[in-house]
Amino acid sequence: MAQTADLENSAGVSETDPFSDAAFITRLNKLLSMLGSAQPEEADTARRKLIEYLGQYRLSFTDLGQRLRDKADRPSFTQGAREMSLERQLAIARTAKQEAAAEALAAAARVHSLEVELQRSTFEIGRLLGMQSRARAWMVLGWVVAAAAVLLAILPRVLPAPRQEAAAQSSSPADGGQVTLQPNDPFGANNPLHLRPGEVAGTAAVQDLAIRLSPNDDANVRAFLNRGERVVVQQAVHVGPQTWLLIRTATGIGWVRAGDVER
Image (cartoon, rainbow, N blue to C red):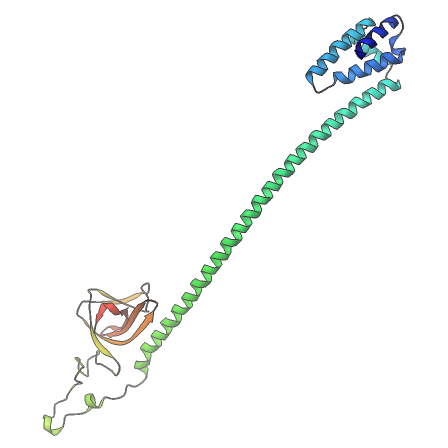
């Protein structure tokens, strides 16, 4: 209603220079500001009203453009253009602010994801270090056991064994001068498998019995024995749930599982 009244009041000054009328300039600035609206309907309405308003003064858009250039130094028009420029700048600033806020939220989500991944990686590294420490401890223990086993296997050869009176003694006059062996020793005194103190005779219980360099299923194999082949058991060692025997054969010394030897 107010806009209609303004149009009717301005009809009486069509014969004068409208750009010298403050009311005309004020109304023109309002329509121009509405013409730059971001709402399509509002901008279209402002365009139609501007055409009607200029028609009352027998002006066209070409006349308006020419007169605006001629009157560009007037404070009213300069103020309206400045207001339109400020509104556009404000709209641009608001859009930039919204984009910055959205980017900040996305960055915060990425940071949170990276923190979760970092915690997971830290936990995994700690678990792997713990497993590595346990594996190193078991490896050291295996080396110690193997060294002890080798030492125990070498000591009987380095240290002189006590003589057995029954094995070393010659026969008395009553036995006709013949040499007698130990009652439980199935091997002769000159046999490599001759029993020593603390040793027990045995035989391989399986075919192709593997003799290993250390009490471990993964240790290197130094020889294989046929089933029923004679061995001498020097000692037994418990490694975890498995019992291993240090045996002496005609080919050397090594380790076998306790269940693979019959004693």
